[in-house]
Length: 303
Image 1 (cartoon, rainbow, N blue to C red):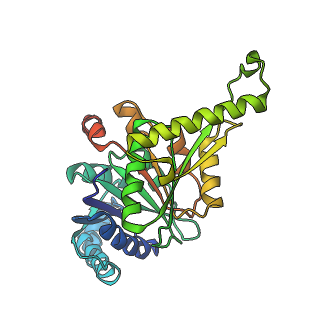
Image 2: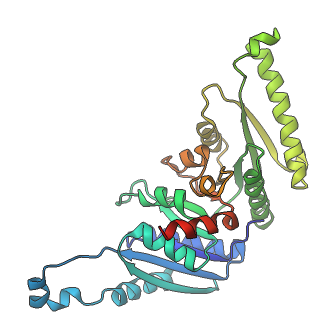
Image 3: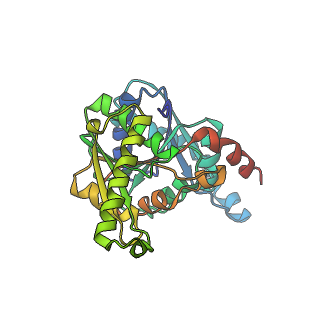
């Protein structure tokens, strides 16, 4: 199982902060988190020297005031019992967060996914692609309830990591796991003498066998999860998984980052990448191989 002991929660001083702080309380209890960092990056302003001399208070450190405000929010909405720190930095948000996550060896980055609330909502998508650790995107209307977990899989190693995480959450919440795989009919199916529909059934049967073998690698049986197999006619597995999650009223989606190398793993795979772009009201966890990513990210940050 992917260990989640150190959480980084990105705050932007909007209404979304209250949701994230409250949701994080549940994560602490769920994963047995030991440390939470509530992190905000303030924009820096370069003022003309004349203005600085005339209005010295404008350049007074704002970090302390912002930390005090955030701490008050945390005291009000953070109900879990664990150590936490409030940190405020100034500058480029993406750069500061990446470096802080690396320095503190963060296991899971928690970010908001806005729909109606004000704010650009662009940064979470970018960070999900580049940060070394796993990522949880929390919609503004998310609830703490987890009764059904959708796990899109391609039977890879990273899919196994996602499944193991879902199994851990199931043990704590009693949630059902829906294992989803989308299969395709090869373009040369007609050479077999079979119709498209006939070969589709062959591919579905093969996908089911692969799913059973995949579950066995995690010491699970087919009866331990609900297996859903979908014919992918438009080469869009992300859309099929998202549609199934909505149809089945999933409370959480857990997907593995597809990469086979350090770089590819950090930058996600096409399915996970696309799923973080959806205007979704379902929390999404992208599981990354943190150990494989760290060396590459450290080299990247030195460039």
